[in-house]
Image (cartoon, rainbow, N blue to C red; front, top):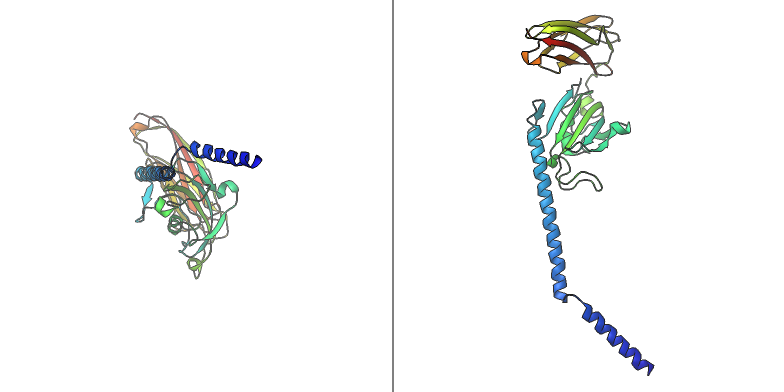
Length: 294
């Protein structure tokens, strides 16, 4: 009798489970296939949006007059020029870098860690391999790297970097460690420099007039001082640098001419970046004036 009851219970349970099924088996498979199709379509759409967003960012960015574009599409901005040889595609380098998304969100930074990175130029993304070969030691560039020169469709797992996202890096080339670029090339000897002043106040000046001052620079090191470049933050300010090396213990002058326009009738603050074979490789001079109508 107990066996009959057990068999009857098993049959009822089987019937209950069978009857509780929502969909026939073929429809279940169809539902899974449809779900997978929708997920794929969603992913394709998201990737297209990310690609279009990145292309728009780069298209707008290259309108910046400070940005240069290479044949590959790599965009870069020179924040500070360096001195000496440039690395080759197989060289090892030491750099500081700060990486962000186009919106400015930081995803990696040796600067924040306080620890420079060392690597071979054949070990990094294509944008870095190309970009670093533009730089001399001590230079600092800002790179805007298209997705095809970065991670493309396959960003690092767990990263905030999205597929097809362009990347932004500020990179400082600290040193070429090894490779053909530094073999048989005499390294630029470093020295030190000191200015008689780091800022100048023109006071009240008239628009459309030339206002001139001089910054005296002295070579306080043991090697010849080479002023590589002097660049102003505005077209209204024109600096000029010594063309010949300054010997140890000797001095020379950097001339700065401030010529304000009629549309600058207010307080003006400008900078002049001086790049030389020193450590640090750059110093910033400041000028100020209050512009009045002529």
